[in-house]
Image (cartoon, rainbow, N blue to C red; front, side, top):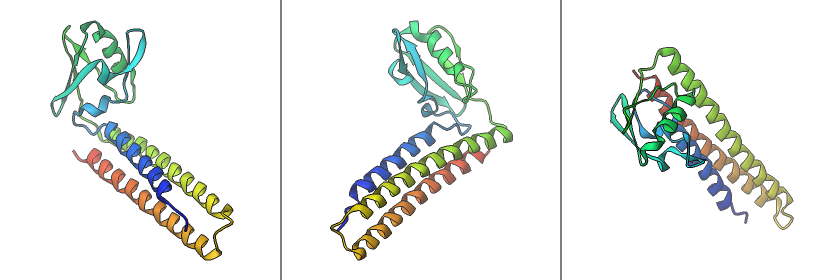
Length: 181
């Protein structure tokens, strides 16, 4: 019998990666994960923001960033300002950085949904690639009968559909959240 456990694990990791990408997508409300992809130049190298500062949501429209080392304030502000996809303008008072989250226009919301849909396609391509690799493995398996190969291919296709549907559901939830005022 053909074992699809490895393929299932690979597809689960694609869905997990997709979900973490969706958490970074801006929805109009302040959330610390919005800045998860920011890399800050500190101590001569680029580091994730969460390794040089504490990020909290003070309320629905404001993120507060408290650097572990106050000398990094300028580089943190520059890193946030430098990420044009976020469109944020941080302000600092020498101790903390305040990042106001502007309300999203209808046009900007549609643009964010469009960018998120590109991530959907990337995830689905990754799942289809896993499916193709699994189908190739089934085809070259000489010890399996044709019936077993057909069942294995059907099982692989069902897995692909299951995980593709999970991605679609997560995207639908996220796009509804983005478009909601």
